[in-house]
Length: 187
Image 1 (cartoon, one colour):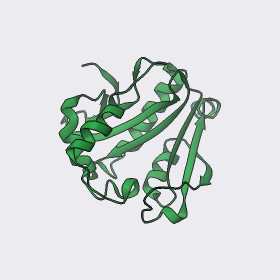
Image 2 (spheres, helix red, strand yellow; image 1 turned 120 degrees about the vertical axis):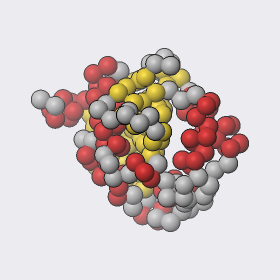
Image 3 (cartoon, rainbow, N blue to C red; image 1 turned 60 degrees about the horizontal axis):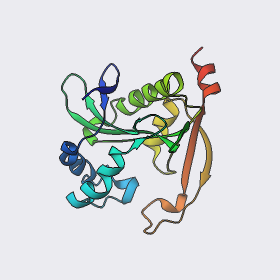
Image 4 (cartoon, rainbow, N blue to C red; image 1 turned 180 degrees about the vertical axis):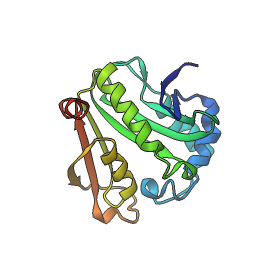
């Protein structure tokens, strides 16, 4: 299986069914899932029937995936995943950036490194015009990664979730980076 993208320390590749165990471990860490679902654990059936099909989806505008398994380059350890997917199936113009890494990878710059590499690839190779990302307003670590990756705060918003989790009362935030902004930053 060919790798999608490499950085100094990361390899991003397409998911396979063999990643089920990695995903189950990742989504069963209550701290990893704190801002996703309040820290509730996942079960194998949910990973196999909901999560994995989403991660394996191929976007027609790229004839490629939008979610990438991340491993540490030198040791080969599974770190989590990155999302860089078109918001519309047939248009690469606007993509959503996201990441979910295991706790051992936190605070080591992996999220920023992978995000910057995906943004660069998007603007140079994939015809992306705008990158967007969002998180809960109280998720300061994720917000900091977005900022360090070059995205700027766009807005606060609220959504109605079936089950509110701690911090949801503060709403969500959206960040963005346009091609023109990125080009200015990279000159």
